[in-house]
Length: 98
Image (cartoon, rainbow, N blue to C red):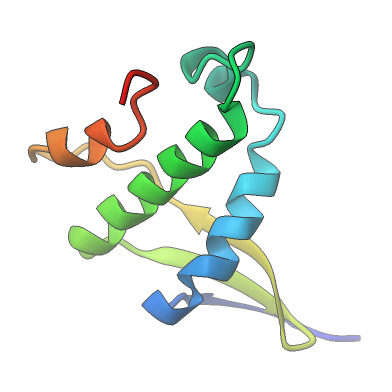
């Protein structure tokens, strides 16, 4: 049996983590509503939103965790945090009107 290892991800692993997060949130009803799933370009908006959230974590020193099994990244997770910070630059990157 292969043990699962939980560890923080490095910035070099962000692409693989983003791929996992994008697949995990593909059918999320909240993001579907918030990012206007019925309009063209939803997949790109969803990925941009997740990437902005990932960048927010990195910029604020927040953990991005990954679960590894048999040498392969199988899970990635971002914790929701409430920080007193200006995120307006990040928000503009995934807004449907941008």
